[in-house]
Length: 232
Image 1 (cartoon, rainbow, N blue to C red):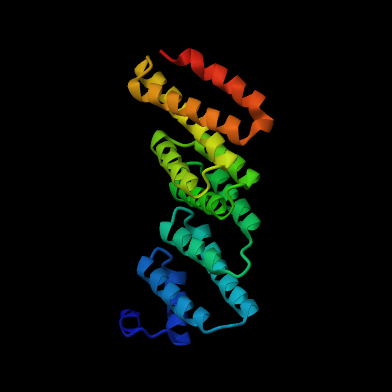
Image 2 (cartoon, rainbow, N blue to C red; image 1 turned 180 degrees about the vertical axis):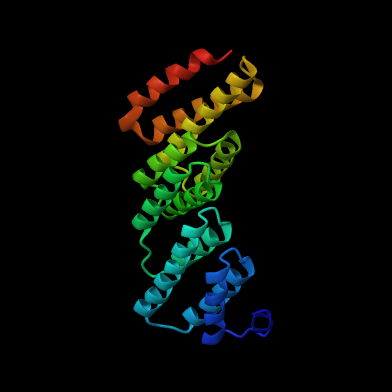
């Protein structure tokens, strides 16, 4: 396989060889990477969307078999994500159901958690006003550790630069910053400077929401009253 990879042999023989190797050893990351190169080369020359879809669906079946052997195989999840993104018509609903199934089997499967965050993140960047994606994102964040919470806050900040007046981004930032402030308070037993800064940021965000979303002003005012007594 290495010889074919080094000579950029993207033939059907090379592709079949990766199938044989990965069927025997699904954790062979180099084989997955070479397989993607072969697929990318052949997909670029195939103008038939239905043919590309069928080819990629076959690849998903290969990952299904690999995940049955080891659901914590990071290389398989990475390949699966690449395949779905390359598909002309990805079945995202079915993919979400699959991920939920593996999480129910083992909630400690960090590869599945990361994959699920990536899945929702792509949906949010594609359509920042997708209410269902945001609600699911909040459910995920609510079950995440502090490092993940901080990462998702930063990602929301980045998304906000693209959509500065999207109420879902602002509301989520309020929810996540408040969550982080509460975590910090619980750990220290008192309000830290960072927690206070997070609450001040929430107040600013809520005032922005009042301006861009006047129909929900009463709701934002109620949230503001919850934050203002916390200020010192």
